[in-house]
Image 1 (cartoon, one colour):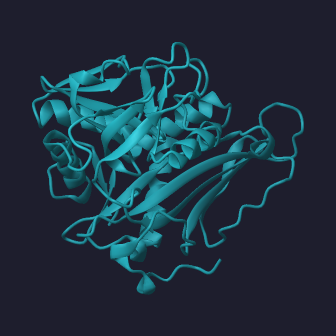
Image 2: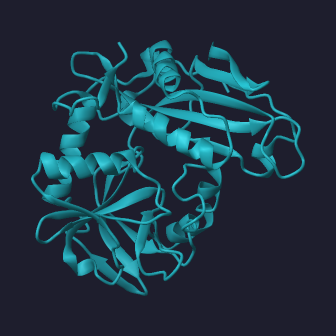
Length: 343
C-alpha cells in the first residue's frame, strides 16, 4: 500500500478506514525489558509464525483521537485513561506493561510526526490512533510469549457511522459478548473477533448492530456492539449499565461526569433490564470511534421499542454530544486534566 498523501485528501469526505501514514511508534520487549523504541516508517510487523498472538490471541489495543482546535493547535483527550486501560488489559493477558507516561509521550510523537494528517477544524474529522501490543516469538504451547511488540499507528477519519449524529436501530443478540469473569473488561482482540458473527446477523436484518445482554440471564443490557449503552430517564437521570464484563469506556465515564456537572442530571451505573425500556426518553451508544450514536429503537423478541425518535436526536443526547465534542475540539472549557496539548 502506498503512503498516504495529506495534500490529496478530501477532509470533508473521510471514511473510517486504514491509511498508511508516514510514521508510527514501535517498541520491542525482549530479554525482560522494552527496547528499540521510537518512530519508524515501516508499516509492517515482522513476527514468527509461532507467535502467541496468531494462535492464542495474546493481543490488546486501544482507540483514541487527536483533535485540531479552532486556533490550529492539536490536542489529545484523556490519553492517561487509555494508558491505564491498556495497562489493565496487559495485566489480564500476562503481557508486559508499556509505562503509562511513556505511552502518552509515544502517542504525542506519532501525532506530531504525522501532524499534516490531523484534519482541519470544522468538519468533525479527527486523527484516530491505534495503540497495539501483541505477543510474539516462537511458542507452540499455551503460555505467554517470550517477546512483545508495542506499536501506535494513526490515520485521519470521518464519522464512524456514515449518517453522523442520526438515530439508528439496534437488535438484541442471542450471543454472549463476554463472560462475567472473562475478558469483557479488557480491550483484547478476542472480544471483537467473537462479535463479528452477531454483528453481521444484525446487519443482515437491517440493524446498525446488536445489543448484548448479560451472559447469565440474558436480561440485562451490557454493550451495544463495541460501544457502551446509556439512557436518559423520563425524570432526567443518565443511566448506564453496570456489569463485570463491560469495557470501561472513557467516553462513557466522561459523559457521566458531564451529565452530572454540566447538565445537572442525576447519574447512575446500575443493572438495566431490557424489559424496562419505558423508563427512558432517550438512549444512545457511546465510544471513542462514534462518540455518541443515538439509538432510535431497540428490537427485542420481535418488539421494537422506540426511544425519542427514529429520525431525530433527543435534546439531552444532543447537548451531551455538543459538550463532549466541544471539549475535545477546544471550544468548551475542559475539566482539569482532561486535555493535553501536542503542539
